[in-house]
Each structure stands twice: as structure tokens, then as C-alpha cells.
Length: 272
Image (cartoon, rainbow, N blue to C red; front, side, top):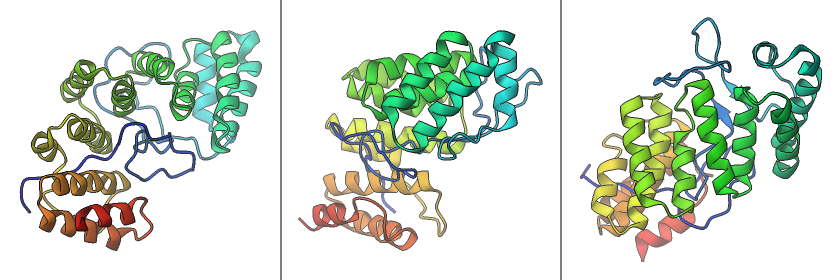
């Protein structure tokens, strides 16, 4: 393929509300499921595992069925007399998040936070709930706190998306640079490319965006985050007038997931 790519998160879109948020709008990059271990594990504090192992995956689509490792994390970070109440609030927050009741999730997570401010999972659920509500500044603060406590870069793409929404281009650039320096998991970088490529496209820099999101190869069984990157790449290619690359990418997305959000709009843009 050529040397162009697209941008997936477009300004002003509402945060996603379902379980699997495959798509191209702002906050469409995060699905509410975090894989363990992101690289760049600097600054681990009481919220991190004492055995130096990566934090396991947190599946926020599972509701209140909190795994044992979260109970152990609460034990490490919470005074004994507060643990039962914190677990109850955390379970309620997770259940509300899974039901897309993000306001309620914030209420329960805030209650848990007051009792256990150094717990990484509480900060994570609170941050992502605020993000889904479009409350960019408090979400950004909680995301950064989560990163300091957990020592993970997993949610830096979400931080970048909040910064885009807050119209802080210099901080978006810095966050992208920091992520490259700190390192992270492959899907974290794919999500970051979606956000950063979208930011560059919005800024009128489609050539730079293409350098970021150009898929180079279109695999037969792409990861969800790869599809989002491809979608942005197709948008960027369209802006650059490279309809051949845009059409090729569109065909690859359609073959992998015919129900991927935004395909009709993308096809119309390519054909315009």
C-alpha cells in the first residue's frame, strides 16, 4: 500500500455506551476492558501488585463479578474496617458501568475513592465512567492518578482523547511523545495511533496522520484496535485523495467485520 492513513476519533462525538465500542468517534477507542501489563511500569505504589506481576485484565463488561485479585488489591490499599464497604461500592460501580449507567458508576466509585484513595481499580473505573460521560477534565485527572498508582500506560490513549476534547494540542503531542518513551502493549499503541491520527487529521495535517495510522499490511484476522486504526487510515487516505488505498482498507474492514460502525459513512466519503 501507499503511505497514507486515517483518523478514527472525531471531535464532538458522544462517548460510546455499549460493551464493545468499535468505531471512529471520540472515545470510540476504549472498550472498557484492559489487558494486564503495559510496559512502562514506572512509579508503582500501593495500588500495584507486591509480586511485581502485571495487574490482570479488568473486564468492565462483567458487572459486579469482581475477581479475587481485586479483593486482594482492596486488602492492600484499604484500612481493615473499610474494606467491606469499599468492595460493596466497587461492585456497585462495576455493575453500573456494565449497564452503561455511568453517572451511577461515578457515584459509587467516588464513595469507594473516599475510603480507599490509593486503590488503582477504583480510580480506573471512576476515570472511565467520567470519560463515558464526556466529563473530560475530571476524567483526565483520574486517568493520570491511575497511571501514577498502577504504573501502567494502558489508558494513555484515553488521556490523549480527553486532551483532544479539551483542545490542548501541545499536551496531546506531549502525551504521544511520553507514551513512545514509556512504552506499552501493542493494542495500547494501536489505540493511541487512532487518537493521535485523528488529532492530526482534525488539525489539517493528513500527511502526518497517514504516517501514524498507515496499516502497511492488512491482516486476515485483525484485532479490534487494528480495525479502528484501519478506519482512521481510510479516512485519512480519502482526505489525501488516495481513493485506491481508502477503498482497499474499507474492503478489508468489511471483510473482517461487516457490522463495523461507520462503514456506510466511510463508503459515501470515498465515493464523494
